[in-house]
Length: 253
Image (cartoon, rainbow, N blue to C red; front, top):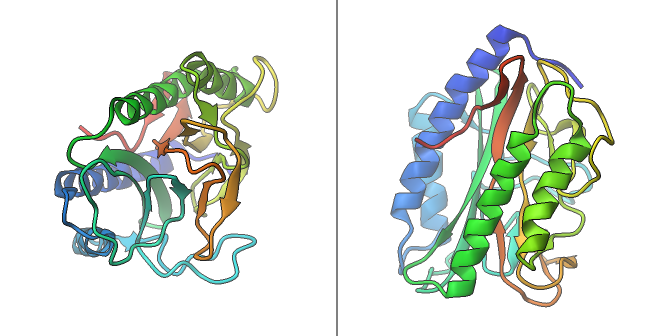
């Protein structure tokens, strides 16, 4: 785990603004009839045009059989994360998770949104709202002197009171020179437990939520989907722990 200097955090903030701008354009591009592969091409072109590097492209996380071949993770409906862009045509009522990262001046940023395609069900709309609410509840605990357990507790509390489930086995993480660094940031926990948060720590907080059970399975393309086929959502921000409170580096404005 490497704590970041004030200068590094400013560099990451600039990268975060760039990433947020790309995600905002991707969100606007989502509509019935577009393929997830087309969204990947948009993401790649925007990142490269901005002078940065897609950090998911050719990335091979621990345990993966092969490097990831795309810029964007586009996970539809019951697929939670790591969905590979394809010729799949988004249709009215789908829910698509857009997970994206870039490397700016040697430092990594990571963020995700979930977008409803056309008109979605009332359940899907609630899922998106609750998942995003849980993200901000977790961010609200990201203060000097609090703990990782406080973040997980806040996220889990929002999800549980709405009768949804935290997805099993998938977590947030530290981030900086590497896309995935220590510590692991769980989406559940107990208050005042776990690592104490200190100034200079930068983490990716990313609740992943299912309408049904949280059990998942790995699919042939190395993505993860719910065992029961239930709908899922994901929202993520890169957040710096500062003396003035949590600083969201990837906020879409």
